[in-house]
Image (tube, rainbow, N blue to C red; front, side, top):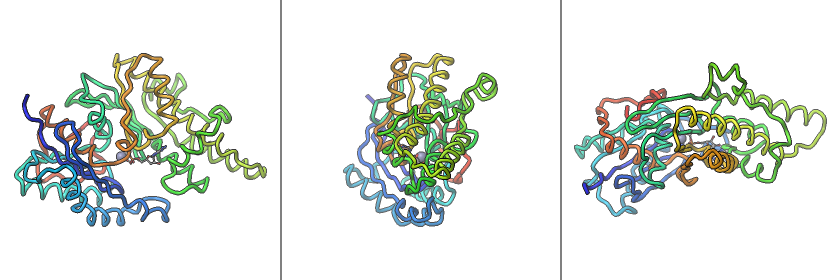
Length: 346
Ligand code: KG4
Ligand code: ZN
């Protein structure tokens, strides 16, 4: 067997500075530093604060990863660093460090697509994809349905407005929950009845399916939830937090799983991978397990620590790019907040 490459992964698209080292799809070490606490009082990410935090955390994070893995920087065969989409300043910090390392080591650099990497990271946990897989990537910035077939990526659909995580964070804010509110709504929903409130399921009517078969929209649901809260408050009714959270989460999980199953059937794919920060959501995980099992689909979801942003995803994507013979990026690539969704390597 040919030795698998030693890949250094660097992820800085948002507020997590992640560095990981893999040997092919075997994770040897990873470290994540987060500036989340510094943004909490602003109710959202402050890009300048995030960029500065990456600058401070990156090399100590890389050093910690090399130490845990027991590997030397000089032995790295390739570097995968997130090139987009994400916050331009944050991406630039990680990419600049990656370029400097690639230049100094004389090793190839792969500018990684963050959205696709959210699906590829699952290979560290459940082994290499065998044949094409359908990928549902749901995060704070994206809700996308992709087909990943080796080096080829196709986008079937995406959100037309808010991402699933974004809708959770915005509704959570109305409930007075701290940012990011996703995990808090998840916790509240566990004690509630998902059928208590009939929230809308956007883009699921036959006429929508003609034009937006595999697209999502969560902004109408967010507005419906806000109106429901307002009406309850105006009427002096106490908000049943568990039922509200469960119905809201249930509506999101319902549409995500329903459209994914429809896509798998239409394309004849039997394996689905779900990734991205929002895939840590327990309502989505439970419903996906139940429905995909009933539909005869194999479901792959990474452990929650691989769902949110981390360096392992960039390393896994780098290893995937090497395995499938993708050309490395030039050292002149820029950070691209709007990177082509079908392009794994920038
Ligand atoms: O992938 P990620 O870490 O960053 C982006 O690339 O956007 O995703 C962060 C998003 C946030 O919106 C957060 O609220 C959401 O993922 N999230 C969750 C849960 N854990 C994280 N949403 C719902 N339930 C969760 N358990
Ligand atoms: Zn992400």
